[in-house]
Image (cartoon, rainbow, N blue to C red; front, side, top):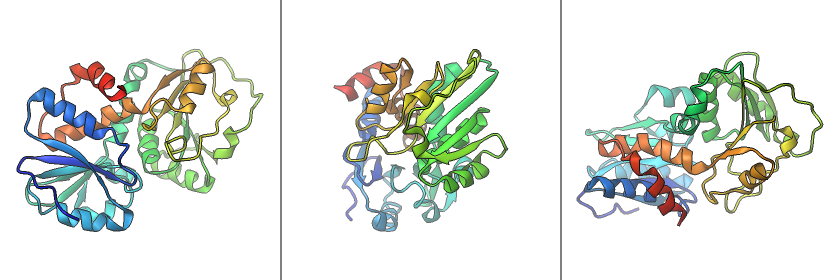
Amino acid sequence: MSTPSVNRPYAEVIGDPIAQSKSPAIHNFWLEKLGMAGRYDHCLVKLDGLAEYLAARRSDPDWRGCNVTMPHKLAIVPLLDRLDPLAARIGAVNTVVREVDGTLTGYNTDAPGFLEPLQRELDKTHLFRMARVLGTGGAARAIVAALAQEKFVIVLAGRDPGKARAMLDELAPGTDHHAIDLAHFCDPTDFAFDDRAHCFDLIVNASPLGMTGQPPLMFDFSHAPPGSVVYDIVTSPLDTAFLQAARRAGFATVDGLSMLIGQADIAFAHFFGQKPPRQHDEALRKLILS
């Protein structure tokens, strides 16, 4: 694996697949707006090539680090020199920073990035908060930890309910949370929801289901309480079938680009030493959607 021939700072996003990533468009847009010398690329890294990739990059002083997407968020952890406390608690890394001495520090910017588009609602006082989270991978770990911090009762659904239970016990201690089979949400329910006034209900697809090349996410919206916000972290396609169905059912939605921009904000500051120019968010979204 060759190292890019550059003499200016650069970062990149790694994963498999990776060509669909919107991270290069985000970071390069910010670099251009700030007039900074730097670049951000994407790099296809297979799971069995992860150690080789890091060994090559850590010796390059121009390399500032990388964002990490599936399937590497868990596998990369033992290959790093240290973890930020939040990343250590979550046990998953989506941002790697090369320190000046060549050592590598792992961060998790998914958790705060996930919460960013919900902040206006989270700033309100609620009598009850409940989140139904679909998926038990690396991104789900960050989301569960973030929601637990915000006092949500969490229903975590996965193909393996035992794995979901173990994740809840680790990241969201308490007896209020529930682990169930993902298939539970496939079929209609006639459950009569109680009064949701002063409640905040969230439905989150934290899995790759519905992503380009992946099977669809099967979810019947009779399981969503009235007034729920439906959030899909998938970014390819951006307007997923899950979000389209949610809107048809009358629910407010949040797309994966919102979380991606939120987590990229923190990663950009790590890589390039400046906060990104968020006053241009509307233009950035138009660029990515064009």
